[in-house]
Figure 1 (tube, rainbow, N blue to C red):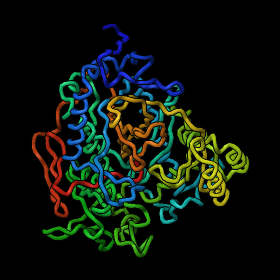
Figure 2 (cartoon, rainbow, N blue to C red; figure 1 turned 90 degrees about the vertical axis):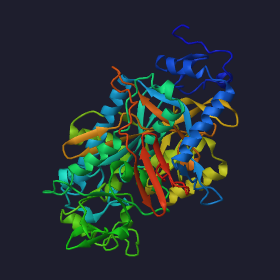
Figure 3 (cartoon, one colour; figure 1 turned 135 degrees about the vertical axis):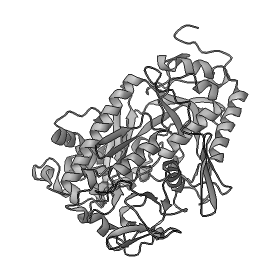
Figure 4 (tube, rainbow, N blue to C red; figure 1 turned 180 degrees about the vertical axis):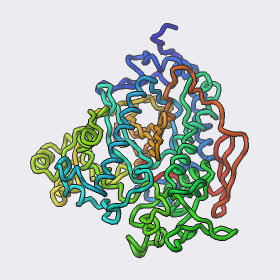
Length: 538
Protein backbone atom coordinates (compact mmCIF):
# COMPACT_ATOMS: atom_id res chain seq x y z
CA UNK A 1 0.00 0.00 0.00
CA UNK A 2 1.50 3.35 -1.03
CA UNK A 3 1.90 6.46 1.12
CA UNK A 4 -1.44 7.79 -0.06
CA UNK A 5 -3.26 4.83 1.59
CA UNK A 6 -6.12 3.95 -0.74
CA UNK A 7 -9.46 3.17 0.83
CA UNK A 8 -10.17 -0.55 1.04
CA UNK A 9 -13.39 -1.10 -0.89
CA UNK A 10 -14.41 -3.82 1.61
CA UNK A 11 -14.24 -1.38 4.54
CA UNK A 12 -17.89 -0.87 5.36
CA UNK A 13 -17.47 1.85 7.96
CA UNK A 14 -15.84 4.30 5.51
CA UNK A 15 -17.59 3.22 2.31
CA UNK A 16 -20.02 6.17 2.20
CA UNK A 17 -17.75 8.86 3.65
CA UNK A 18 -18.29 12.22 1.93
CA UNK A 19 -15.53 14.82 2.25
CA UNK A 20 -17.08 18.21 3.10
CA UNK A 21 -16.62 20.60 0.15
CA UNK A 22 -16.39 23.86 2.15
CA UNK A 23 -14.66 22.74 5.37
CA UNK A 24 -11.24 21.41 6.25
CA UNK A 25 -11.37 17.66 6.84
CA UNK A 26 -8.63 16.87 9.34
CA UNK A 27 -8.45 13.21 8.31
CA UNK A 28 -9.12 13.04 4.55
CA UNK A 29 -7.52 15.14 1.83
CA UNK A 30 -9.27 13.33 -1.06
CA UNK A 31 -11.58 10.29 -1.37
CA UNK A 32 -9.70 7.37 0.13
CA UNK A 33 -6.60 9.50 0.83
CA UNK A 34 -5.72 10.68 4.32
CA UNK A 35 -3.24 13.24 5.61
CA UNK A 36 0.18 11.69 6.30
CA UNK A 37 -0.09 11.68 10.10
CA UNK A 38 -3.31 9.65 9.89
CA UNK A 39 -2.04 6.95 7.54
CA UNK A 40 -1.08 4.33 10.13
CA UNK A 41 -4.24 4.81 12.24
CA UNK A 42 -6.50 4.80 9.18
CA UNK A 43 -4.89 1.58 7.96
CA UNK A 44 -5.78 -0.03 11.28
CA UNK A 45 -9.40 1.13 11.13
CA UNK A 46 -9.79 -0.19 7.60
CA UNK A 47 -9.39 -3.70 8.97
CA UNK A 48 -12.66 -3.53 10.92
CA UNK A 49 -15.93 -4.71 9.48
CA UNK A 50 -19.07 -2.83 10.41
CA UNK A 51 -20.10 -5.46 12.97
CA UNK A 52 -16.61 -5.56 14.50
CA UNK A 53 -16.50 -1.81 14.91
CA UNK A 54 -20.00 -1.69 16.38
CA UNK A 55 -18.84 -4.22 18.97
CA UNK A 56 -15.75 -2.13 19.77
CA UNK A 57 -17.95 0.93 20.10
CA UNK A 58 -20.09 -0.92 22.64
CA UNK A 59 -16.94 -1.86 24.58
CA UNK A 60 -15.99 1.83 24.73
CA UNK A 61 -19.46 2.76 25.98
CA UNK A 62 -19.22 0.08 28.64
CA UNK A 63 -15.86 1.53 29.73
CA UNK A 64 -17.52 4.89 30.31
CA UNK A 65 -20.45 3.28 32.08
CA UNK A 66 -18.10 1.39 34.40
CA UNK A 67 -16.18 4.59 35.13
CA UNK A 68 -19.44 6.31 36.06
CA UNK A 69 -19.05 8.89 33.31
CA UNK A 70 -22.54 10.14 32.55
CA UNK A 71 -24.06 13.53 31.86
CA UNK A 72 -27.39 15.29 31.54
CA UNK A 73 -28.45 17.43 28.59
CA UNK A 74 -30.06 20.48 30.13
CA UNK A 75 -32.69 20.77 27.43
CA UNK A 76 -34.03 17.29 28.17
CA UNK A 77 -37.69 17.22 29.05
CA UNK A 78 -36.98 14.36 31.44
CA UNK A 79 -34.77 16.22 33.89
CA UNK A 80 -32.25 14.17 35.81
CA UNK A 81 -31.99 11.36 33.24
CA UNK A 82 -28.31 10.50 32.85
CA UNK A 83 -26.64 9.35 29.64
CA UNK A 84 -23.31 7.75 28.92
CA UNK A 85 -20.83 10.40 27.83
CA UNK A 86 -20.53 10.06 24.01
CA UNK A 87 -17.02 9.02 22.96
CA UNK A 88 -15.71 8.38 19.45
CA UNK A 89 -12.91 5.84 18.99
CA UNK A 90 -11.26 7.46 15.98
CA UNK A 91 -8.62 9.69 17.65
CA UNK A 92 -7.83 13.25 16.70
CA UNK A 93 -4.13 13.45 15.88
CA UNK A 94 -2.01 16.61 16.17
CA UNK A 95 1.60 16.39 14.86
CA UNK A 96 4.37 17.47 17.24
CA UNK A 97 5.41 20.55 15.22
CA UNK A 98 1.81 21.74 14.90
CA UNK A 99 1.24 21.33 18.61
CA UNK A 100 4.42 23.21 19.53
CA UNK A 101 3.01 26.44 18.05
CA UNK A 102 -0.39 25.89 19.68
CA UNK A 103 1.18 25.28 23.09
CA UNK A 104 3.38 28.37 22.83
CA UNK A 105 0.38 30.48 21.89
CA UNK A 106 -1.81 29.12 24.68
CA UNK A 107 0.86 29.78 27.31
CA UNK A 108 1.48 33.30 26.00
CA UNK A 109 -2.21 34.04 26.26
CA UNK A 110 -2.61 32.66 29.80
CA UNK A 111 0.44 34.53 31.12
CA UNK A 112 -0.81 37.80 29.63
CA UNK A 113 -4.30 37.27 31.06
CA UNK A 114 -2.85 36.69 34.53
CA UNK A 115 -0.95 39.98 34.31
CA UNK A 116 -4.15 41.65 33.13
CA UNK A 117 -6.18 40.39 36.10
CA UNK A 118 -3.41 41.40 38.51
CA UNK A 119 -3.30 44.90 37.02
CA UNK A 120 -7.08 45.38 37.13
CA UNK A 121 -7.16 44.53 40.84
CA UNK A 122 -4.18 46.76 41.66
CA UNK A 123 -2.84 49.74 39.66
CA UNK A 124 -5.14 49.53 36.62
CA UNK A 125 -2.45 50.82 34.30
CA UNK A 126 -4.12 49.31 31.24
CA UNK A 127 -7.29 51.29 31.97
CA UNK A 128 -5.43 54.53 32.61
CA UNK A 129 -3.58 54.06 29.32
CA UNK A 130 -6.97 53.52 27.64
CA UNK A 131 -5.95 50.22 26.04
CA UNK A 132 -9.08 48.59 27.45
CA UNK A 133 -12.20 50.69 28.25
CA UNK A 134 -12.75 50.98 32.00
CA UNK A 135 -16.53 50.76 31.62
CA UNK A 136 -16.14 47.37 29.94
CA UNK A 137 -14.46 45.97 33.04
CA UNK A 138 -16.57 47.62 35.71
CA UNK A 139 -19.84 46.69 33.98
CA UNK A 140 -18.96 42.98 33.98
CA UNK A 141 -21.04 41.02 36.50
CA UNK A 142 -17.92 38.96 37.26
CA UNK A 143 -15.78 41.93 38.34
CA UNK A 144 -15.37 41.84 42.15
CA UNK A 145 -14.55 44.99 44.12
CA UNK A 146 -13.70 42.67 47.01
CA UNK A 147 -10.57 41.59 45.11
CA UNK A 148 -9.06 45.08 44.93
CA UNK A 149 -5.50 45.18 46.29
CA UNK A 150 -5.44 41.43 46.97
CA UNK A 151 -2.33 39.79 45.56
CA UNK A 152 -2.40 35.99 45.89
CA UNK A 153 0.74 33.96 46.57
CA UNK A 154 3.02 33.98 43.54
CA UNK A 155 0.90 36.66 41.89
CA UNK A 156 -1.22 33.97 40.19
CA UNK A 157 -4.94 34.46 39.62
CA UNK A 158 -5.82 32.08 36.76
CA UNK A 159 -4.06 28.96 38.04
CA UNK A 160 -6.19 26.80 35.74
CA UNK A 161 -7.22 27.99 32.28
CA UNK A 162 -9.26 26.26 29.62
CA UNK A 163 -8.61 27.79 26.20
CA UNK A 164 -11.04 26.81 23.45
CA UNK A 165 -9.60 26.62 19.94
CA UNK A 166 -10.91 25.86 16.48
CA UNK A 167 -9.05 24.92 13.33
CA UNK A 168 -10.26 26.99 10.39
CA UNK A 169 -10.39 26.02 6.73
CA UNK A 170 -7.11 27.92 6.26
CA UNK A 171 -5.41 25.29 8.45
CA UNK A 172 -4.69 27.75 11.28
CA UNK A 173 -5.86 27.53 14.89
CA UNK A 174 -7.95 30.37 16.30
CA UNK A 175 -8.90 31.03 19.92
CA UNK A 176 -12.67 30.91 20.28
CA UNK A 177 -12.85 31.85 23.95
CA UNK A 178 -11.02 31.82 27.28
CA UNK A 179 -12.29 30.01 30.38
CA UNK A 180 -10.67 31.40 33.53
CA UNK A 181 -13.15 30.68 36.30
CA UNK A 182 -13.67 26.94 36.83
CA UNK A 183 -12.97 25.33 33.44
CA UNK A 184 -14.40 21.82 33.21
CA UNK A 185 -13.56 18.79 31.11
CA UNK A 186 -10.16 17.52 32.20
CA UNK A 187 -11.63 14.36 33.76
CA UNK A 188 -13.04 13.45 30.35
CA UNK A 189 -9.63 13.91 28.73
CA UNK A 190 -8.17 11.35 31.14
CA UNK A 191 -11.17 9.03 30.91
CA UNK A 192 -11.06 9.14 27.10
CA UNK A 193 -7.49 7.90 27.21
CA UNK A 194 -8.46 5.06 29.57
CA UNK A 195 -11.33 4.04 27.27
CA UNK A 196 -9.04 4.14 24.23
CA UNK A 197 -6.47 1.91 25.92
CA UNK A 198 -9.08 -0.55 27.10
CA UNK A 199 -10.79 -0.82 23.73
CA UNK A 200 -7.89 -0.59 21.25
CA UNK A 201 -4.94 -1.58 23.42
CA UNK A 202 -2.91 -3.33 20.74
CA UNK A 203 -3.38 -0.46 18.29
CA UNK A 204 -2.64 2.30 20.81
CA UNK A 205 0.66 0.79 21.91
CA UNK A 206 2.05 1.12 18.36
CA UNK A 207 1.97 4.92 18.39
CA UNK A 208 4.17 7.50 20.10
CA UNK A 209 1.46 9.50 21.83
CA UNK A 210 2.21 12.11 24.47
CA UNK A 211 0.81 11.16 27.87
CA UNK A 212 -2.01 13.07 29.56
CA UNK A 213 -2.06 11.08 32.79
CA UNK A 214 0.35 13.40 34.60
CA UNK A 215 -2.24 16.20 34.84
CA UNK A 216 -3.52 15.42 38.39
CA UNK A 217 -0.03 15.47 39.85
CA UNK A 218 0.82 18.63 37.91
CA UNK A 219 -2.34 20.22 39.30
CA UNK A 220 -1.42 19.19 42.83
CA UNK A 221 2.13 20.55 42.41
CA UNK A 222 0.65 23.82 41.13
CA UNK A 223 -1.64 24.07 44.17
CA UNK A 224 1.23 23.31 46.56
CA UNK A 225 3.41 25.94 44.89
CA UNK A 226 0.97 28.72 45.82
CA UNK A 227 0.36 27.72 49.44
CA UNK A 228 0.57 30.50 52.03
CA UNK A 229 4.08 31.57 52.97
CA UNK A 230 5.82 29.43 55.57
CA UNK A 231 3.81 26.26 54.85
CA UNK A 232 6.14 23.40 53.90
CA UNK A 233 3.55 20.60 53.61
CA UNK A 234 0.31 22.34 52.59
CA UNK A 235 -3.07 20.72 53.02
CA UNK A 236 -5.00 21.01 49.75
CA UNK A 237 -8.69 20.23 49.18
CA UNK A 238 -11.23 20.26 46.35
CA UNK A 239 -14.38 22.19 47.31
CA UNK A 240 -17.52 20.92 45.54
CA UNK A 241 -21.11 22.20 45.70
CA UNK A 242 -22.14 18.58 46.27
CA UNK A 243 -23.37 15.41 44.61
CA UNK A 244 -26.19 17.14 42.73
CA UNK A 245 -23.83 19.40 40.81
CA UNK A 246 -23.57 18.39 37.16
CA UNK A 247 -19.75 18.31 37.35
CA UNK A 248 -19.56 16.31 40.57
CA UNK A 249 -17.90 13.39 38.79
CA UNK A 250 -15.01 15.65 37.81
CA UNK A 251 -14.67 17.08 41.32
CA UNK A 252 -14.48 13.59 42.81
CA UNK A 253 -12.20 12.35 40.04
CA UNK A 254 -9.64 15.11 40.58
CA UNK A 255 -9.69 14.81 44.36
CA UNK A 256 -9.12 11.07 44.11
CA UNK A 257 -6.36 11.21 41.50
CA UNK A 258 -4.54 13.98 43.40
CA UNK A 259 -5.00 12.15 46.69
CA UNK A 260 -6.59 15.12 48.48
CA UNK A 261 -9.89 15.44 50.39
CA UNK A 262 -13.10 16.25 48.54
CA UNK A 263 -15.08 18.61 50.76
CA UNK A 264 -18.32 20.57 50.78
CA UNK A 265 -18.79 23.94 52.43
CA UNK A 266 -20.21 22.32 55.56
CA UNK A 267 -16.94 20.39 56.02
CA UNK A 268 -14.93 23.62 56.44
CA UNK A 269 -15.08 26.50 58.89
CA UNK A 270 -13.10 29.65 59.61
CA UNK A 271 -11.66 30.51 63.01
CA UNK A 272 -9.55 33.65 63.58
CA UNK A 273 -9.06 34.04 59.82
CA UNK A 274 -7.75 30.50 59.31
CA UNK A 275 -9.64 27.77 57.44
CA UNK A 276 -10.10 24.38 59.09
CA UNK A 277 -11.47 21.05 57.92
CA UNK A 278 -13.52 18.87 60.21
CA UNK A 279 -12.02 15.40 60.57
CA UNK A 280 -12.55 12.44 62.88
CA UNK A 281 -9.26 13.39 64.52
CA UNK A 282 -10.28 16.98 65.11
CA UNK A 283 -9.75 20.21 63.14
CA UNK A 284 -7.07 20.28 60.43
CA UNK A 285 -5.87 23.53 58.90
CA UNK A 286 -6.50 23.92 55.15
CA UNK A 287 -4.01 25.92 53.09
CA UNK A 288 -5.19 25.69 49.47
CA UNK A 289 -8.76 25.31 48.23
CA UNK A 290 -9.49 24.32 44.63
CA UNK A 291 -13.02 25.62 44.61
CA UNK A 292 -15.50 24.35 42.04
CA UNK A 293 -18.32 26.72 42.86
CA UNK A 294 -19.05 30.18 41.54
CA UNK A 295 -17.93 33.38 43.25
CA UNK A 296 -21.46 34.28 44.40
CA UNK A 297 -21.75 31.11 46.48
CA UNK A 298 -18.22 31.06 47.92
CA UNK A 299 -18.77 33.05 51.11
CA UNK A 300 -22.21 34.11 52.40
CA UNK A 301 -20.55 36.81 54.52
CA UNK A 302 -19.04 38.45 51.43
CA UNK A 303 -21.43 37.63 48.58
CA UNK A 304 -24.83 35.89 48.52
CA UNK A 305 -25.96 35.83 52.17
CA UNK A 306 -28.36 32.94 51.52
CA UNK A 307 -25.70 30.62 50.05
CA UNK A 308 -25.56 27.24 51.77
CA UNK A 309 -22.71 25.98 49.61
CA UNK A 310 -19.80 28.18 50.64
CA UNK A 311 -17.69 28.77 53.73
CA UNK A 312 -18.56 31.78 55.93
CA UNK A 313 -15.48 33.95 56.41
CA UNK A 314 -13.26 32.30 53.81
CA UNK A 315 -12.78 35.60 51.93
CA UNK A 316 -11.47 37.25 55.10
CA UNK A 317 -8.99 34.39 55.54
CA UNK A 318 -8.03 34.77 51.87
CA UNK A 319 -7.41 38.50 52.23
CA UNK A 320 -5.16 37.82 55.23
CA UNK A 321 -3.12 35.40 53.11
CA UNK A 322 -3.93 32.45 55.36
CA UNK A 323 -5.50 30.37 52.59
CA UNK A 324 -5.26 30.42 48.81
CA UNK A 325 -8.16 29.93 46.42
CA UNK A 326 -7.84 28.22 43.02
CA UNK A 327 -8.81 30.06 40.80
CA UNK A 328 -8.88 33.48 42.43
CA UNK A 329 -12.33 35.01 42.87
CA UNK A 330 -13.13 37.66 40.30
CA UNK A 331 -11.23 36.14 37.37
CA UNK A 332 -14.48 35.93 35.42
CA UNK A 333 -14.37 39.49 34.08
CA UNK A 334 -11.30 38.51 32.03
CA UNK A 335 -13.10 35.72 30.14
CA UNK A 336 -16.04 37.97 29.34
CA UNK A 337 -16.59 37.53 25.59
CA UNK A 338 -16.49 41.29 25.10
CA UNK A 339 -13.12 41.54 26.89
CA UNK A 340 -11.97 38.73 24.56
CA UNK A 341 -11.84 41.25 21.71
CA UNK A 342 -9.02 43.08 23.50
CA UNK A 343 -6.82 40.05 24.26
CA UNK A 344 -4.42 40.72 21.34
CA UNK A 345 -3.92 44.24 22.73
CA UNK A 346 -3.52 42.83 26.23
CA UNK A 347 -0.74 40.51 25.03
CA UNK A 348 1.06 43.39 23.31
CA UNK A 349 0.63 45.67 26.35
CA UNK A 350 2.03 43.33 29.01
CA UNK A 351 4.42 41.11 27.04
CA UNK A 352 5.46 43.42 24.20
CA UNK A 353 4.85 40.50 21.84
CA UNK A 354 2.64 39.82 18.85
CA UNK A 355 -0.07 37.22 19.56
CA UNK A 356 0.94 33.75 18.40
CA UNK A 357 -2.68 32.60 18.11
CA UNK A 358 -5.31 34.81 16.54
CA UNK A 359 -8.76 35.65 17.81
CA UNK A 360 -11.89 35.16 15.76
CA UNK A 361 -13.00 38.60 14.54
CA UNK A 362 -15.63 39.81 17.00
CA UNK A 363 -18.25 42.58 16.97
CA UNK A 364 -19.16 44.21 20.29
CA UNK A 365 -22.82 45.13 20.16
CA UNK A 366 -22.41 48.00 22.63
CA UNK A 367 -20.34 49.81 19.98
CA UNK A 368 -22.65 51.71 17.64
CA UNK A 369 -20.97 50.68 14.36
CA UNK A 370 -20.73 47.05 15.40
CA UNK A 371 -24.33 47.04 16.64
CA UNK A 372 -25.61 48.37 13.32
CA UNK A 373 -23.58 45.81 11.38
CA UNK A 374 -24.89 42.97 13.55
CA UNK A 375 -28.53 44.01 13.07
CA UNK A 376 -28.06 44.19 9.31
CA UNK A 377 -26.12 40.94 8.96
CA UNK A 378 -27.43 38.73 11.75
CA UNK A 379 -28.19 35.90 9.32
CA UNK A 380 -24.45 35.65 8.57
CA UNK A 381 -23.22 35.77 12.17
CA UNK A 382 -23.08 33.81 15.42
CA UNK A 383 -24.56 35.83 18.29
CA UNK A 384 -23.32 35.00 21.80
CA UNK A 385 -24.08 36.31 25.29
CA UNK A 386 -20.84 37.49 26.91
CA UNK A 387 -21.38 35.71 30.23
CA UNK A 388 -22.89 32.32 29.35
CA UNK A 389 -21.15 29.00 28.71
CA UNK A 390 -21.99 25.49 27.55
CA UNK A 391 -23.45 26.65 24.24
CA UNK A 392 -26.45 28.34 25.87
CA UNK A 393 -28.05 31.49 24.53
CA UNK A 394 -26.27 31.25 21.17
CA UNK A 395 -27.89 32.03 17.83
CA UNK A 396 -26.36 30.77 14.59
CA UNK A 397 -27.83 33.19 12.10
CA UNK A 398 -27.63 30.99 9.01
CA UNK A 399 -29.75 28.31 10.72
CA UNK A 400 -32.25 30.64 12.39
CA UNK A 401 -35.82 31.29 11.26
CA UNK A 402 -37.12 34.79 10.56
CA UNK A 403 -38.92 34.69 13.89
CA UNK A 404 -35.75 33.72 15.76
CA UNK A 405 -33.74 36.46 14.03
CA UNK A 406 -36.40 39.02 14.93
CA UNK A 407 -36.46 37.84 18.54
CA UNK A 408 -32.68 38.07 18.83
CA UNK A 409 -32.60 41.54 17.32
CA UNK A 410 -34.91 42.61 20.13
CA UNK A 411 -32.77 40.85 22.76
CA UNK A 412 -29.59 42.49 21.51
CA UNK A 413 -31.24 45.91 21.25
CA UNK A 414 -32.53 45.69 24.83
CA UNK A 415 -29.12 44.76 26.29
CA UNK A 416 -26.28 45.59 23.90
CA UNK A 417 -23.58 45.05 26.57
CA UNK A 418 -24.65 41.41 26.93
CA UNK A 419 -23.97 40.33 23.33
CA UNK A 420 -21.13 39.94 20.87
CA UNK A 421 -21.19 38.55 17.35
CA UNK A 422 -18.70 36.62 15.25
CA UNK A 423 -18.58 35.46 11.65
CA UNK A 424 -19.67 31.85 11.16
CA UNK A 425 -16.27 30.18 11.16
CA UNK A 426 -15.50 27.12 9.09
CA UNK A 427 -14.74 24.77 11.97
CA UNK A 428 -12.71 21.81 10.80
CA UNK A 429 -14.39 18.42 10.54
CA UNK A 430 -13.23 14.99 11.62
CA UNK A 431 -14.26 11.45 10.72
CA UNK A 432 -16.66 10.32 13.46
CA UNK A 433 -18.61 7.06 13.89
CA UNK A 434 -22.34 7.84 13.89
CA UNK A 435 -24.52 5.38 15.74
CA UNK A 436 -27.70 4.53 13.89
CA UNK A 437 -25.98 5.14 10.58
CA UNK A 438 -23.24 2.64 11.57
CA UNK A 439 -20.61 4.43 9.53
CA UNK A 440 -18.10 7.27 9.69
CA UNK A 441 -19.24 10.74 8.72
CA UNK A 442 -17.55 14.16 9.01
CA UNK A 443 -18.49 16.19 12.09
CA UNK A 444 -17.31 19.58 13.37
CA UNK A 445 -14.74 19.59 16.19
CA UNK A 446 -13.02 22.05 18.51
CA UNK A 447 -10.38 21.69 21.22
CA UNK A 448 -10.32 22.73 24.88
CA UNK A 449 -6.74 22.93 26.12
CA UNK A 450 -5.70 23.06 29.78
CA UNK A 451 -2.96 25.28 31.23
CA UNK A 452 -1.64 25.48 34.79
CA UNK A 453 0.19 28.48 36.25
CA UNK A 454 1.82 28.28 39.67
CA UNK A 455 4.60 30.00 41.53
CA UNK A 456 7.62 29.66 39.24
CA UNK A 457 5.98 26.86 37.23
CA UNK A 458 3.93 26.52 34.05
CA UNK A 459 2.33 23.51 32.41
CA UNK A 460 0.28 22.99 29.25
CA UNK A 461 -1.31 19.56 28.84
CA UNK A 462 -0.16 17.95 25.59
CA UNK A 463 -3.60 17.29 24.25
CA UNK A 464 -6.99 18.33 25.50
CA UNK A 465 -10.69 17.71 25.06
CA UNK A 466 -11.62 17.41 21.40
CA UNK A 467 -15.36 18.01 21.39
CA UNK A 468 -17.52 16.78 18.51
CA UNK A 469 -20.84 18.14 17.28
CA UNK A 470 -22.63 14.81 16.77
CA UNK A 471 -25.67 16.40 15.15
CA UNK A 472 -25.20 16.63 11.39
CA UNK A 473 -24.39 20.18 10.34
CA UNK A 474 -24.25 21.48 13.91
CA UNK A 475 -21.48 23.89 14.92
CA UNK A 476 -22.17 23.58 18.67
CA UNK A 477 -19.90 20.94 20.15
CA UNK A 478 -20.86 21.17 23.84
CA UNK A 479 -22.04 17.87 25.28
CA UNK A 480 -24.71 19.81 27.16
CA UNK A 481 -26.07 20.46 23.67
CA UNK A 482 -25.73 16.86 22.47
CA UNK A 483 -22.03 16.76 21.55
CA UNK A 484 -19.41 14.10 22.23
CA UNK A 485 -15.64 13.85 22.40
CA UNK A 486 -12.51 12.15 21.06
CA UNK A 487 -9.16 11.16 22.49
CA UNK A 488 -6.64 13.78 21.38
CA UNK A 489 -3.23 12.43 20.36
CA UNK A 490 -0.31 14.86 20.36
CA UNK A 491 2.46 12.90 18.69
CA UNK A 492 5.95 12.69 20.20
CA UNK A 493 8.86 13.29 17.83
CA UNK A 494 11.23 10.75 19.34
CA UNK A 495 8.91 8.21 20.89
CA UNK A 496 9.38 9.59 24.38
CA UNK A 497 5.67 10.21 24.63
CA UNK A 498 4.65 6.55 24.52
CA UNK A 499 2.02 6.45 27.26
CA UNK A 500 1.40 2.78 27.91
CA UNK A 501 2.40 2.73 31.57
CA UNK A 502 -0.16 3.48 34.19
CA UNK A 503 1.11 5.68 37.00
CA UNK A 504 0.96 2.96 39.62
CA UNK A 505 -0.08 -0.59 40.34
CA UNK A 506 -2.01 0.02 43.56
CA UNK A 507 -5.68 0.88 43.68
CA UNK A 508 -6.93 3.91 45.56
CA UNK A 509 -10.50 4.15 46.74
CA UNK A 510 -12.73 6.40 48.76
CA UNK A 511 -16.39 6.45 49.72
CA UNK A 512 -18.53 9.57 49.45
CA UNK A 513 -22.23 9.75 50.18
CA UNK A 514 -22.62 6.01 49.88
CA UNK A 515 -20.62 5.69 46.63
CA UNK A 516 -17.26 4.01 46.40
CA UNK A 517 -14.86 5.26 43.76
CA UNK A 518 -11.75 3.28 42.85
CA UNK A 519 -8.79 4.31 40.70
CA UNK A 520 -6.27 1.68 39.65
CA UNK A 521 -4.24 0.50 36.65
CA UNK A 522 -7.43 -0.05 34.65
CA UNK A 523 -8.81 3.41 35.30
CA UNK A 524 -11.73 4.52 37.45
CA UNK A 525 -14.79 2.63 38.58
CA UNK A 526 -17.68 3.79 40.73
CA UNK A 527 -20.45 2.24 42.79
CA UNK A 528 -23.81 1.22 41.44
CA UNK A 529 -25.29 4.70 41.62
CA UNK A 530 -23.12 5.94 38.75
CA UNK A 531 -21.47 9.31 38.48
CA UNK A 532 -22.62 12.80 37.75
CA UNK A 533 -20.56 14.48 35.10
CA UNK A 534 -20.62 17.34 32.69
CA UNK A 535 -20.41 20.95 33.76
CA UNK A 536 -22.11 23.73 31.85
CA UNK A 537 -18.78 24.88 30.52
CA UNK A 538 -18.03 21.73 28.52
